[in-house]
Length: 295
Ligand SMILES: Nc1nc2c(c(=O)[nH]1)N[C@H]1C(S)=C(S)[C@@H](COP(=O)(O)O)O[C@H]1N2
Ligand SMILES: [Mo]
Image 1 (cartoon, rainbow, N blue to C red):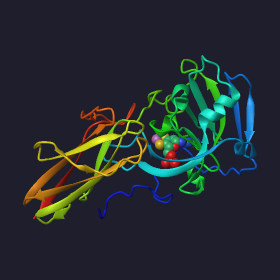
Image 2 (cartoon, helix red, strand yellow; image 1 turned 120 degrees about the horizontal axis):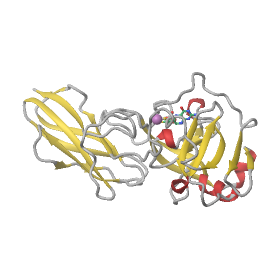
Image 3 (cartoon, rainbow, N blue to C red; image 1 turned 120 degrees about the vertical axis):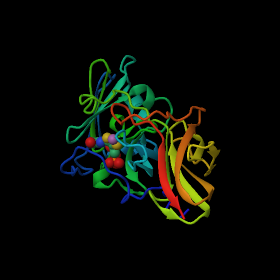
Image 4 (cartoon, rainbow, N blue to C red; image 1 turned 60 degrees about the vertical axis):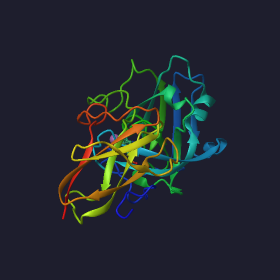
C-alpha cells in the first residue's frame, strides 16, 4: 500500500531515543561487559569472548514507552547477536536475583526482569542491525533488545555492565524519574494511510496501518467509521509474535468528513485498552483516529 509503513525499518529511518548529549564512541577493542552482583562467578567479557556464544538473528519491533497514541517511536529491525540467557547461564544467576541492572558506558541504567530474559524469548545482546554493525546512535558496539518490553526497561545501548540485583534494592534511570519499574509493551494500533486531514475521492479507498503487541502477537485489527460498527481488516501474514503486523482495509468512502478509528486484539485474545491515558508512567492507552475529507 503506497504510503504505508514498511515492515522492516531501515537504520536511517529508525527512531532514536536516549539521554546521550554526545553519542558514545566505543571501539570493539575497548568494549567490555562486566557481569557481577548476585552471580556464582563474576566475569568480564571482551569482544572476542562473544564468539563463544551462538549467533542468532531475529526480527524484533522496538517501542518507546513515551510514544503517544498514533506516534512513530516504534521500529522493526533485524538484530544479530547473542542470547542474553546463554550469557547469564554461563555466570550462574543466584535464584533470588530478579533484576538485571544494565549500565551503558555513559552511565544510563535499565532494570530488566531476569525472569523475562530467561523465559525462552529471544532477548539479545545485539551487535548488528539490519545486517550492518550497530550504528553509533543505536548502541555500537553492543546493545540489548528484549521482545515485549519498552526500551527504557530493556534496550540498553552501549551496554558495558550487568549487575544481578533485586527490584527491591535497585532503581534504574527512568524509574527514579517517575516511570514504572516494569514496562511490558501495551497493545497498540495505528492508521498510516490516508494521511491526517487528507482530501480523498469518494469510492474505494485503501486504509492501512500497523499494530503491535510484542511477544503476544496481533490476533486481529478492526476499524470503524464515524463511531459505526467495528469491521475486520485484512492483516498481513504474521512474521512472529515479536514483530508488528501490517493491515489494510478497503473502505467505500462516501462524500463528507469522516473519522476512522482503529483497535487491535492481541494473540491471547485480549483487546487493546481503549481508555485514553498519557504515556507516563507505563505507556499510553487509547485508540488512534484519523479524520479525512471525502469529496
Ligand atoms: N544508553 C542508553 N540506552 C538506551 C536509552 C538511553 O537513554 N541510553 N534509551 C532507551 C529507550 S527509552 C529506548 S525507547 C531505546 C531506543 O532505542 P533506539 O534509539 O535504538 O531506537 O533505547 C533505550 N536504550
Ligand atoms: Mo523509550
